[in-house]
Image (tube, rainbow, N blue to C red):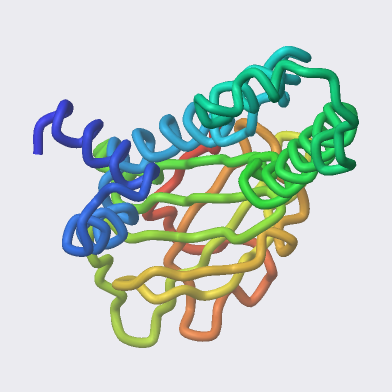
Length: 230
């Protein structure tokens, strides 16, 4: 997929114009295609604000008389011009009030249902091995979920385990986020993180089967990377 194709597909996905097959493709590739994920975030940030409704525009006072006159039959034109007492349904003030109230109701409902909620703070970390090859991606929404996504399976020897760690720049020691499988996505509540800041460290180490016996990394570091704010 070219960069242009990826950008167009991401925009159509965000706008709801993508076909069922295209939506399935995007949702399947989001976990492994960093550029596609970044394009989706880009269009979300720029297009969702456009769903807000504009302020209502009050009609001119001459609008309703002009409409009434245009609807009067030709034979009644002279009678339409003659002074007469208007019924309550012909009150310009009434219909102006109704128009303003209706427009206000639409605006309130539009803001409630169409305006996007403030986007949660997002972070991304690409974990690399000592050959600088990317092996895992960490995605975090500060008030949502953390996802640890493998770009390729990481073999785990028998009687060993893959352990996930984090350490914010303000922390003095790393914190274990638990044992993780080497071949599939792991999801955790973001609240499990002791802190979340730019440059927060994430790493995967190879530990004994039940995990580190000391509560600190003891095995070799297989993958490591730092979080950046999106």
